[in-house]
Length: 179
Image (tube, rainbow, N blue to C red; front, side, top):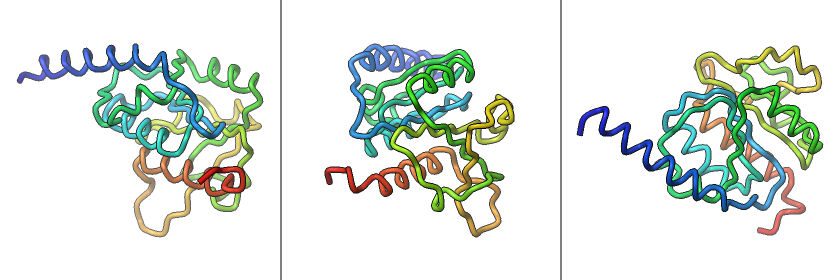
């Protein structure tokens, strides 16, 4: 199969699954993920898979083009996807719903493990290489969190970082969680 044919097949899968996503329902928790201009490679699908596993309320996609839903293993049709043209639009919508924002950043001010996460948490994950496309100082209420690391690598894979922040949220909310 040529690259062009492979892309066409991926696009067909994406469009089919995006239509099915219209029937998706929020998970057991009120947290949401905000994916800010990630590469539309397989990380987006993997994040949907973890979001379903951890009971995410939704995944907000900011300026992310079509991606292959295959790595999501069916989760793209189960977790609500909300599409935004800009982070400012996404921020305004979620702020209006009472969400507190947390930017995952290797240079963050606070450790994820030492931060109390409110029920309505919005976790922002940026591009693995370039970070977020907005200026964090334009959103002074947004707390910058870091995931403790002890090796020499500068950051984690974005789908791994998303899974860790969701796990920590669910761990903290375990009192209200029906396990």
